[in-house]
Image 1 (tube, helix red, strand yellow):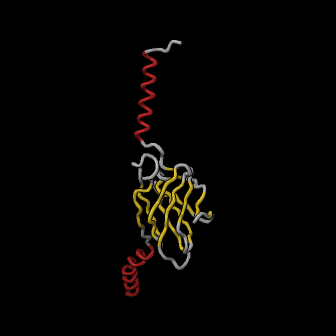
Image 2 (cartoon, one colour):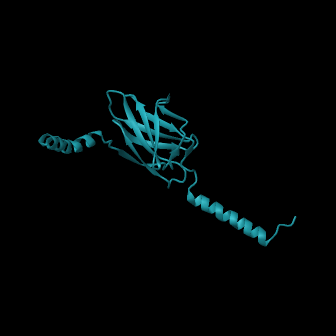
Image 3 (cartoon, rainbow, N blue to C red):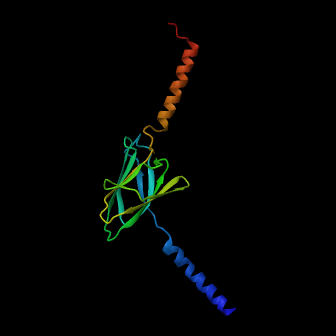
Length: 164
């Protein structure tokens, strides 16, 4: 009985260290998407990497998000990105490291985010992700204006029929 109590005490004392050593710490890059669409729709992207992300850019035309990496790494590592589905959604057409396509990346859907694990080399400076949809070019205000315009046109044509 004493042995069981000792083992239980050791497990209780070591459990917090085990969970903290395996927990993944995320950093955040803010205002991703401010250079696309109406500029008001931005997202915070969480990431985990040995390297830091210093900037991001979104190309609506190419349907891509680019991340610029800095930092020193001695070995290959993994960049994990939590991409909001409002920013970019898949299936992803391609993931590129410094212009070279990467095929061995993994994606996982996770409550409104797509978790992307990308293996990177120590010299990696730019990661590009090409999706099927990207931040909307026009925000919610444009959609409201369009809806009001359609309702106004329908109303005017009902009140005043067009005579040719």
